[in-house]
Length: 138
Image (tube, rainbow, N blue to C red; front, top):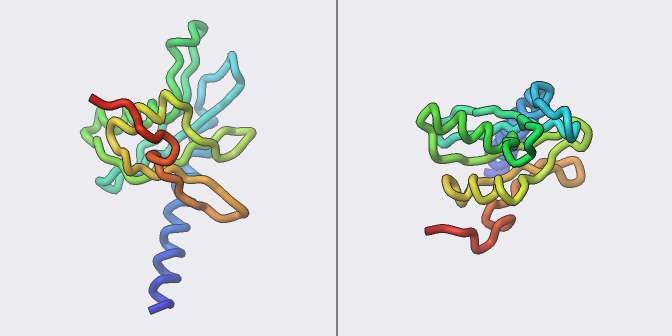
């Protein structure tokens, strides 16, 4: 029984590494001439597909889109609206947490979404509900 648990944990760790790897890879495509903050996101849908996105800045900062919302928009446009986990990677800082606006947008679709973080050389999952308690909803 403990052997099976190790296998499951190893598989989970590999899945998280895949998400992080894709977020890291895609962040190179970010358009960030103003902040130089190049972010990539890899969002795992409940359908098993992974949707990637990058931040796209604009001289009018309010029109900038974050990587998390970019990946979410791609997923929704491909009819996926429920998600399991997301990894968000910034070129210089590594794994990062979503901003408040992205937390709210992600909450709209998947309150139980998990965010990949790395603590003491191990991947762990934080709940979106932990990061945005009492989120706005209708």
